[in-house]
Amino acid sequence: MTIFQRIRKSRYHLLSTVLPVVILVAILKTIAHFLHLEVISKEITMFFPSILTGIIFILGFLLAGVVADYKESEKFPSDIAASLFTLWQEAHYLHKVNNSKTSENLKNKIREFIPLLKYDFFVLQNEKIFELLERISEDIVQFGKESVIVNITIRLKTEVSNLKKVLYRISVIKNTDFIPSVYTSIRVIAIVFLGVTCLLSIKPWWVGLIEVAIFTTIIFTILYLIKDMDDPFEYDGTDDIKSDEVSLEVLDHLQKEFERS
Image 1 (spheres, rainbow, N blue to C red):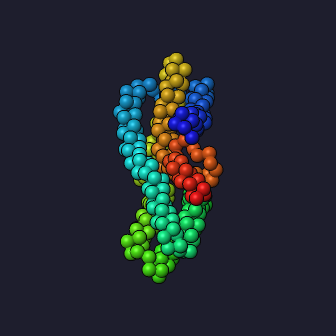
Image 2 (spheres, rainbow, N blue to C red):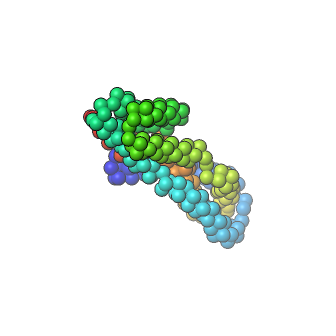
Image 3 (cartoon, rainbow, N blue to C red):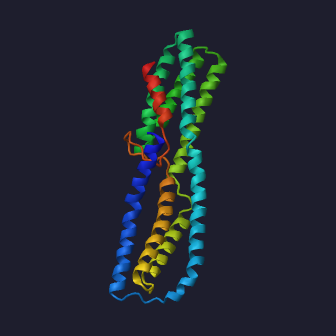
């Protein structure tokens, strides 16, 4: 997927998520006007800049924390690819030099890693990929029994450890929300603020309608962005990756190399 395709998908996804909320709030504001429910004096608007500043500050705090995890997550596919390529190269070398049957078994297991990662680990969230790493470790032990050079065995063990470390970090990012209590609080504050705005008496009334639509767009766009970036690995098992998820293109290319070898 090119950068322009990702931007276009992100725009459509954003519209389909935020626009219904904006329309709903606008309808509520219209109903409040025609039912004469706008009972809050417009003098309260003098506090709006302070309230909005507080809301945006908390949203910025949440966004900063989520962005840090997202930027870290962008490195994981290349780290995984580097470790897998190292394992593959060492196995290929042992096959050429020692004609080791274990090296062929190891290469077959490496071919299974990326499909398991993309579907079983990301989508089904089961433990099969860790079981695969255990079987890879057993092959490395077998290399030791075949009197393979110690340095090669150490490198293989190191790459398996690196893969486990990355997978554990991905699990933490996927299953942990960034300060969920603050996220819940800001949603409550935003809903109360927009509810007050809907009941605010402003003349002409359509100015208040435009105002509440703008506030809703700003607040819920940032909330949507935070929620979407909180899990950069929210794949659905298809090749059609959402625009805001971490790209696995480098792993797809590597898998094609493995299949051709």
